[in-house]
Image 1: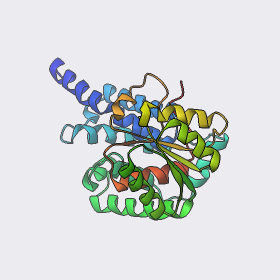
Image 2: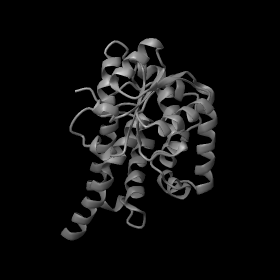
Image 3: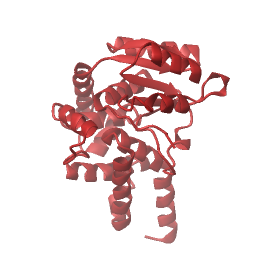
Image 4: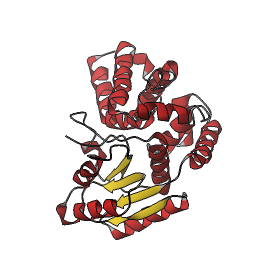
Length: 269
């Protein structure tokens, strides 16, 4: 491979690496574990550049290498026995194989069923079936109270409607950090769904981190228009991150995953 081709490959991988790391973290529920898989993917490409299929879109090709590694190891939590990991492993054992992967690829990463099939080495029809199964199985797994921290009224209403339709109970909507802390005191949620930038220039990240100081077992989903700014690898990052503007399927997927997996990682410094 020429120097130019190597440079081009590096550029293609670099532009898609933040999203691979997001996906890996959503699968594992852990920044450290997810980043280990992302690093292993890069090492695999560097050791065998032909593994990165140039006939596919760069993102699809990168994720396909990841899935070769992921499938070969049998999942991220094998051998873990700490509380959250054990709980997640118990849930995972009841799921049809490959369903969470297909769901995340199609909803959060916005891949077509054809591209999901390329990544997972199956047909588009099989990919769609996996997504349908995932929705069905995860909807039956868990339900609970959802706290929404969002300063845009229309977006907050959309999120409330989606989580309600999923069978969850919204505890209310907070527009600022102060309101979020008051809402939490009024009713403890099972999940927090928070925007990053709030009204009065307060921070959803700060609000969530204050809440989790004494309630570290609550899973969190962050929302932002600029996910790449939070996916730099330079510090702690959220396990679940929705990009604005979002689709209903993305919210449904993230909520189901977070409730199911009970991830508590935030952006605490």
